[in-house]
Picture 1 (cartoon, rainbow, N blue to C red):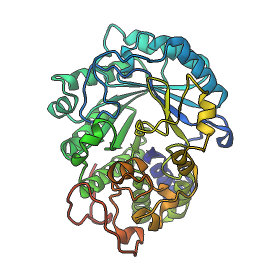
Picture 2 (picture 1 turned 180 degrees about the vertical axis):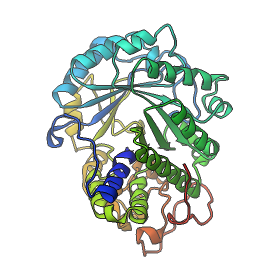
Picture 3 (picture 1 turned 60 degrees about the vertical axis):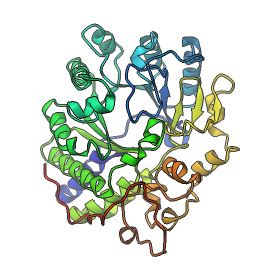
Length: 414
């Protein structure tokens, strides 16, 4: 996950004041003694059947899901392992009868607790319970405006229901964000969604690249054209810049494509050259892809995965072995490779001169396309000249594309 606002705010501060205006870090355990952020799919059941669902969730019960007691025991181990953040997800987590008991205990144990929901089940009947849970963040997915969202979510009227949920959370005083996964079919709705976030005073906008997992893998032919991706990111940069200039604290975040960090560097180099050196160092400290290192996933059955997009690869199960032991075990070749720095990637990624920023990008896409988790990431939308790649590579492509625009040739408006 790349927090664009943090870097753009810092760059503007350096350019205008000579110092970086960066918010102080949260008071979590020291990084050297900190566990990963854990995204926990507590339930696989969902009232929707979204076209790009990585969990392939449907509206039925799945046998073998963890009991409340088993969830509590696992959370205690996570606390002892210094896990700072729990993201409670699904399926649709609000369909789990004990979700508020789990949420209350997670808060009692001291976690930063986020709820990841499709928003359609948040209504006047449960908003008081949701508010009482005192979530540190509620993320709600919108895949476009109106009919576009309804198409992706396969529910007529789903957009209105999800937006209602976001507004109820906002009005209840909960920090709320909108998540958007871009494909070729919803790219055109991005400007309108950004307008909506501004109009409704939403705290965060999270832009997710399509990753090849679950139903998202079947839909990888819809992976956005590279030039669309670049234009979308430039649009995000411009919106973020405008908010920073206006003193608005809204956060813009991207995920599932760590090439965004390199593209952001190019943008900073062009627009705020005085900040280039410091922002580059910040991006290097961020380090790009965190799968298997700083982000983890537990699925509804208690299986542990390197992240949410690696459900085809299980590292162990929390009912048989504590999470803390599973996460530190590098006898699994994939886990050993993910924890290695630098990662032994090859192809274009192996020759890229910016691996210290992106970390080799997302390994899931490489694996899904080639069967090799260390192959080049086909989702990288940056070209060889930008990345200072001189070798002759047969670039992996998921869709045909024309020559992409250079970062200095597209100016997004706010």
